Structures are given as C-alpha cells and as structure tokens.
Image (cartoon, rainbow, N blue to C red; front, side):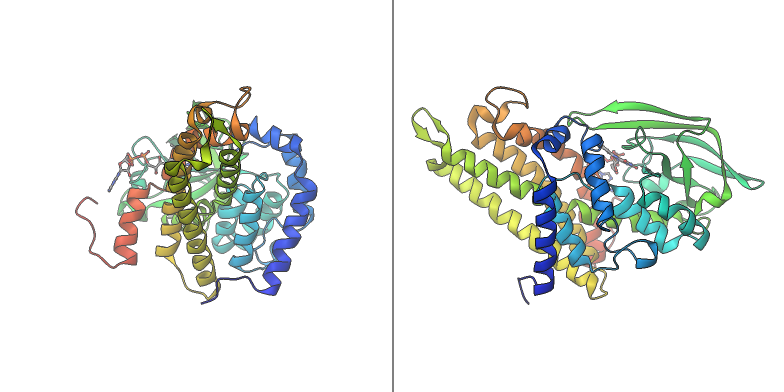
Length: 393
Ligand SMILES: Cc1cc2nc3c(=O)[nH]c(=O)nc-3n(C[C@H](O)[C@H](O)[C@H](O)COP(=O)(O)OP(=O)(O)OC[C@H]3O[C@@H](n4cnc5c(N)ncnc54)[C@H](O)[C@@H]3O)c2cc1C
C-alpha cells in the first residue's frame, strides 16, 4: 500500500493547480457566493469554457467522445483540486449522466447528444424522485406510453434540482406497469421547453432552488430512449453510483477547515485567543482527522476502480462519510467561532465570507442527494458485508 501520488499524478495535480491559480479570481468567487449553488453566472461560464478548451471536461471519457481516457485517480485528483480552490464545478450532466449515456446509449444517440453535452448546448436535470417515490424509487408512477414513433408522457417529478436551468430531463418513466416495479422503468431524454412541461420552484433553506415538474401529454420521439426499453432501473443506479462518488469528494470542506483554523488563531474574544481553548482545539483536531480519513477512503475506492474492481461498499462509505462530515464541519465550525459563526455573508463581521454558515445550511441536502444515508448504509450492510436483507424493505 502506498499513500502517495506517482510522479505522473503529481505533474497532473500541479498542472491543475497552476491553471486554477491563474483563473480563479476574487470576482469569480464573489459571483459564485451570490449565485444559487448549482447555477453558473457569466464569469463561471467563461471559466468553464476555458476548462473545456483544456480538454478537461470528460477526463475519464473515451477519447472518441472528446474525453482523455484517463484513470479514476486522475479524475478524483481533478475534482479535489477544483473543490479545494472553490472553483465552479462541472455539473452532474458531465460527471454522471453523460457517462451513463456513453455506456448504454445507442451509437446514434451518442453521436447526436454527447458533443452537444460537451459544448454545454444540452444540460440535463435528474428526473427520478416523485411525491410517492424517493427512497422507494421503483414506486415511480410517471408513465410513458408508446404511440407510433413517440412516447406520450404524463406524471409529476419532485425535488428536480436543475429543472429551471437545464435544457432536458433525464427522466425515469414507467413503461411497463405489468411487471415487477423495477423491471418496467425506462430513461427518456425530454426537452424541458416542450409543450406540456411545467416547472414550479421549491426554495430550500440552503439557498438551493429545486423544483416540481409536471408532464401533461408530453410527446417525445422514441429515439430519445436511453439504452433499452424497461432497463432504466439499471441505468438509474449506474448514474447514481457515479453521483455518489462525486459527493464523497469534500476538498472544499478541508479548505474551509484550514480557513477556520486561521480564524481561530487570530481571533480574540474576552481577551482570550480562540485557538487556545482546549475544547475548540479538540473538536478541530477531530474534524481534521476525519476529513483526512474520508479523503483516503475515496482515493482507495478510485484506485480499486482503476484495478477493474467495483468498490460499491467503499464508494458508498465515501458518500456517507463525506456528506456527514460536511454537516459536522458546518455545525462544529460555526460553534467554535463563537457568535461570529452565526453571521451571514455581507454582515460586517462575518468570518470566511459566510462560507461556513452557508455550508451549515446547505449540508443536510448532501445526506439526501444521491439517496439517503440510511438507505446507503443498508446497501453497505447487504451488498458489502453480505448481511441478509433488512426487515424494513
Ligand atoms: C434539496 C434536494 C434536492 C434534490 N434533488 C433531486 C434531483 O435533482 N433529482 C431527483 O430525482 N431527486 C432529488 N432529490 C430527492 C432525493 O433523492 C430524495 O429526497 C431522497 O431519495 C429521499 O426520498 P424522500 O425525500 O421521498 O424521503 P423518504 O424516502 O420518504 O425518506 C424519509 C426518511 O426515511 C428514511 N427511510 C426511508 N426508507 C427507509 C428504509 N427502508 N430503511 C431505513 N430508512 C428509511 C430515509 O432515509 C429518510 O431519512 C433532492 C432532494 C432534496 C432535499
């Protein structure tokens, strides 16, 4: 076992660091702070254009689809460096949905859709959850019925986070109601500006706008089917696993802890430096250790993928640990800063530009995003530790 990068990986990391040093400006970071967490302003879009020009959009994608055909470790280094620098991130369309289309889509679909996804012309929202289908996703009811060479879609999605900014839905629909629930689902790409699609906002505590989306006799060509009819459950899980791995990367939170430590070292309350308080030191040291552990867990999973293993248990543990650490850093971080920790962005005395306070409000979402941690723990128990199925499901 080696806990260090190879020469080649160090060169790669340093190239990314140089790029970020040159292209992350204070103006860009300010724009990011003032935007919805998943929306990109003009500076972020210009930044991502430069990332595309570097050829870094699909690092792990095959070369014929504009990718670099690189290892998972290199993809993870990329993700970590971008998050550490608080750079605008490459969205879920590119990190989990396009790779799924690449694996299972027809040649025709790949040729037509992938270049438009790379160029940003097409952006996908994840249309899985419904009012009666969250953890129990196979319960979804939005139906797609074939009529000639079109699907006719009716139903409702909820928690559709990119519905207001994406061009299309990556929509999970019921295409066969007469088989076991998870066997009658298909994935269809649906243009959001089509007649019959209605998007309504849901505003959350963490500043993230998500949406309810309604489909009323929406007609799309059968060519928009991803992979095979009624095999959508498999594809949805494939995309979810990629999304979960992404959530495990929490270099942004490690950066925030470093900034918190700097604040504690230089801030005095009632004549006492915060960093001398024994309780503060112990809590910060504990967070540091756990963040390091999470980082290495994710790198271990990445290296297993490069060895053609499928580290389901390790990837899920990374997502569970990463998402819970986000909440823990937000919680403990704002506490150890004393009353300063409760101030919001734009307040005169706010520390860290309000980034930690925002993390406190945003963090609970990650425990749900990509499936709740309770469900994922159950999968680790069953698939990873080979325990019998739980009595609940
Ligand atoms: C801000 C936000 C953004 C989201 N964005 C998207 C998106 O873009 N696209 C999308 O499709 N979905 C999205 N989701 C939905 C998210 O994936 C679901 O919220 C999640 O899967 C849980 O489903 P649910 O909300 O219906 O909760 P439920 O399934 O009702 O669960 C409620 C609680 O019960 C627990 N629970 C349920 N079943 C079990 C069980 N068998 N064993 C143990 N515990 C159990 C859960 O862990 C949870 O704590 C988003 C959610 C939020 C909050």
